[in-house]
Image: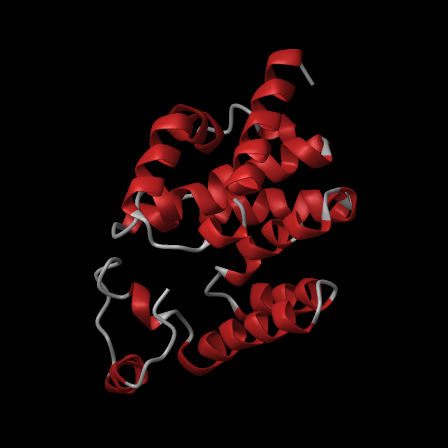
Length: 183
């Protein structure tokens, strides 16, 4: 890995670590803007597959997971682009898992190697998510099982339907109206 690449990867991971768990899943427009301004160019570089080689090292692989799976959910919140790099994130997550990178990063950051599978609308990926999250403890496992149950039940995440221009079924609408997972 080139020095500049390793510095950039470390910058992504350090930023994510510094903002902390309280912010990782918050819906905060100011944070989203800050994240977007700082890493949009790097996200686009990753989306163009120009830094796929980052998957070869644990920390830079983690940076890829953040850039391709988490960043879009913040930077493009409320648009279909939130999900545009999900397939690439999953592809690279599979490679990272084959190299056991999840075990090489700080425990509080291991979740980000699991989320590309949890965000998938494919039941096989959901099964992978549950297996990986089981290693992280009961709370992570429970959350992963909740995601899998939605996919088992509906074959997709109903809360994504409006953004992806999909018709919501009656059963999905009832689920959402009753407080079902809304992303």
